[in-house]
Image (cartoon, rainbow, N blue to C red; front, side, top):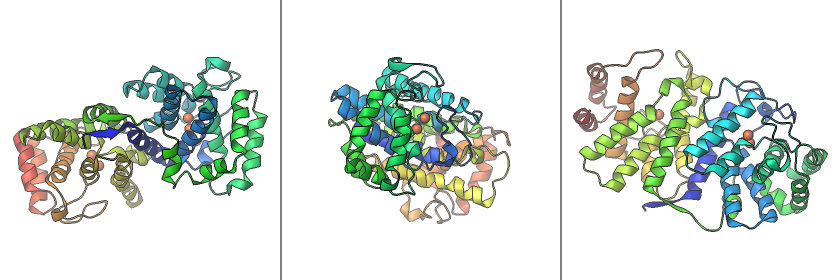
Length: 410
Ligand SMILES: [Fe+2]
Ligand SMILES: [Fe+2]
Ligand SMILES: [Fe+2]
Ligand SMILES: [Fe+2]
């Protein structure tokens, strides 16, 4: 298949944001001053999914305009994308609130999702009375940002460990108390109507593990995207992943450059070449699920930290498997730390299970890491790198043929 469904890609990004938020919140203690909500105490596992569901259900009552509903779906699914970067400087509120809004809106522009989605994301923490970080007031705040504000707070109030029927009243009370300050009162009225149906609460409770809940709220018309489109979005995602850590600056994009040369050397056709490059750009996307404190640790990781670090390949598969039609890319990307002798991770596959593309990616990943300067080591020369990598071939860890191909192209 040469085309993918754009909304599957949005789901993949949304899941990577949730994985990132869950890991990040372990280390942050942020209390939003105008709501008093404690972000550190919340479980973010299904945050984006639930915000997307509640926003879209409110939006469907307000309007059936296709463009409006598409923008609402995409921006609610991406509203916290700014968190997926290195914002460790922002420990305090309102820095954290402001920075993830600004970063998120910048990312959306770079991802080419359009000016309006970018503006919506910038203002998703604004209060209707103008008391939040950018002091925008009333209907100067985009309508979709106002909807997301309510859905976002709803999600922060929602406690996954409590049955829905035991928390309906307390959540509604909070929202009604802030009807004329934080929220647009018309949107609160729509919400109150929506939540009066049991189905709403059942969906909210089950949003994490019932795929249909999210598939049902997608815009009706599928938007298809070709491999070139996926590649340009992947380039921006690669930048976001690389910028999570000072140590991996340009790692994914450098790897993609090497892979592009290899695809030419092996005479891959245009489609396969693009797919191979995309797998290089996204191979470490699972690092969204690794806390910045581990990615940026200046020194040896302890055994627990190593296990957490290793999980990035597992998350790469979870994120990419959202996108139908790129199963080859998903395999190549997720298996880049497997070793021929079965000592790799996350599965411990053996040489017989690993395709040439997977072997090449594994070899080039090591090469790129060794050839780059890191705070704790200098960039190694080609000779120094191959002095390290040649024995890995002899020891049955990496593929000799792939290493020879790499030596040919660089
Ligand atoms: Fe947010
Ligand atoms: Fe959020
Ligand atoms: Fe990796
Ligand atoms: Fe890597």
